[in-house]
Length: 284
Length: 284
Image (cartoon, rainbow over all chains, first blue to last red):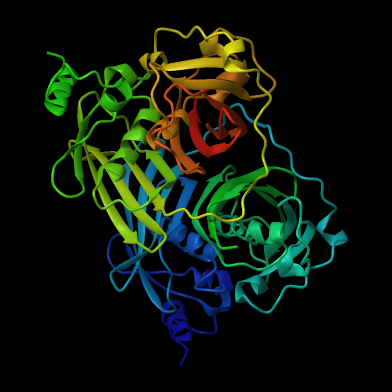
């Protein structure tokens, strides 16, 4: 039996519950205060190990599932310390400091006593203040006016997203020519539809194919080393499932085996949802 | 006796050694494997507690001072969990995973068993690859063509920098008018001159006054919650002291008591030194 299916039954109590693959992949079983056990999900596997976005979402979920969690996510940094092997993992989540407005967490994922991933999370109580957005959403036709990207069968995680490219398809989506810039812009949503929450936003911050592949016009080994997401919106979990997110990303500098990526996520109403950055290892 | 002066003698062995204030402020005394003791420096104090940049540099220094450190800094995230009180602090630095190319650290600063600051650091062995920089340095006259900014006496940390503004002086530097954008561009270097190293770059990533003050044209309470720095260059510690760094920063989104800032640091030769992001708490 697939150990993932086994876990699914254990967690949900019944396989008749039709849960979204994203919720199954990020589901955690508490094992005492601040400790959670999870399991990699084949539906979200990447070239090697799990999709970095699902790992980020799972680290964040450990904090959200902890009864000590206060406020909503403000900032998340995930460091991909080593490969995550197929199978079970343990996550320890520690609220190292709780203030009136912010709460700071240190989160560690281990497999067989080896640290696979570390993260820090800041949660906060938001309150109304003066607000302004200095950046602008990229120009994009409505998602309905764009074709659904034909994504390759592998890596598997792609099948969990409906992507509609405005620019910067890259070699994953059939554009094998080197590009003078690394910018990609796309509409993206979970497939099947799912209401947007903080773990989903964390995962969507990592849906951009490695920018180096756009520039070189070919597939090269690459993997995220560190990912940071700043959450700018208070998320309403009752929002309609299936709303698209407008996502855009570009690299700033490539060199010495690493590049950085800066990304912006917008609601379909043009509101700033998250800004994100990552540092990525690559071979050329 | 000033406890800082006392520490200075203890660490340096003799007060006749003329060490740079930055090195004194970030100096750490090892206390067993992975543990360091430091002391806040009045020269780098901010409105409340130490300048966030000196705390970031000190967290990074714990990793660099550890004999287990492999490679040079690639990524640093510092979370300002709570106020750092004047006095001694303990830093625990743990290399949670060492790979062939990267090494992952978790770093914690405590005072009286309370966590004041957490950080994660990734070090890496850099190797030559294809390289390109997609962003450009901002237009700026040579630093010699610009006046040295007249900075206020308080906060104290400002006196350790030679700043020459190209744009976006803000209320700290005498421009009390609200600004339609939050961009600041300046040449900056340590004062007195000091050769650039990774801790100095980490600190310079935080020299930008809170962007909300530029926009509102007045001083408001504000403090960094989380700071990330990606180091793009292999730093030559033998480089001439006194070289300027061209630094530019802007906010992307303000709202609900927080804003984010994106910054770029360049060498005086136009090479990408670091990209940085931070999330900042504010009251309006």
